[in-house]
Length: 319
Ligand code: ATP
Image 1 (cartoon, rainbow, N blue to C red):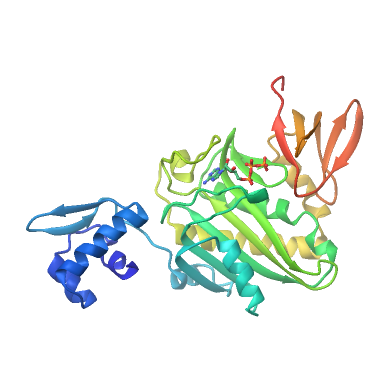
Image 2 (tube, protein in one colour):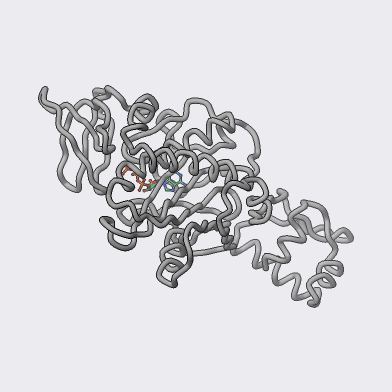
């Protein structure tokens, strides 16, 4: 089906005969595939008698050669899927099968894209970025300290390179423009964190998405912020390079060297928040983070430190 999409992606008209010829199938088989593209991928296709078929909006698909060409310093294997449950899930399966890290898993869409604690990440076809970079870590716990915060910073800086104004961070791992979420980060680990392990750095960025009814909180996308269509291959390449630079700094100098920069970009610094862990809630003022990336919160005048994957921050109404 993707071959048909490759033929149509230029946004020009193609006759049924020409498409059938190129694919080696009958015109009625082309027709069926076109209907499938519409129903499965939510694409809109113009059908004009005498002219043929045309995508309503031209598509720029992910291309591993293009990505490697544009990020030569990151010679990672790049795997691109048309459709997958989740790029993180695929990355975890590949690790189990013995794939050599580093490698990168990308998909045009995710059928079961995930956020933290089993929440869903909305992942329509060919609009956004669903990106999972797998690294082998053998430096023990220190190499993992604050890692999801480092990834957030790299994502934020990449978005700034594309001219997104007002982008910042929310502890522990959200990237926001004002109150609206533009990217999410999900790190997953396999192996022994104290010895040798693999870590999957999962990143979802809203790129060219302009509408969806599925996201149940405020969101935005690069396109909505800048008004410009973004080349996702270029975005992957720049994110690769940015992540590589931040990860190298993290590896050499530890999270302490990144703490201050992270705090400077924390949108909720000094705000009155509730820290939520399941049914428990603690109210406090955000002081910042410590040298391991844990949250520093002033609660009843006393500063306490909180960390763990199950914690979420919410702004208090009186903030
Ligand atoms: P946190 O618990 O860190 O405060 P969160 O509630 O935003 O953050 P995450 O696990 O980071 O949770 O992300 C999942 C949530 O993000 C979903 O429950 C949904 O509200 C929202 N979401 C899902 N898809 C998208 C998307 N494409 N863009 C923006 N937000 C999304």
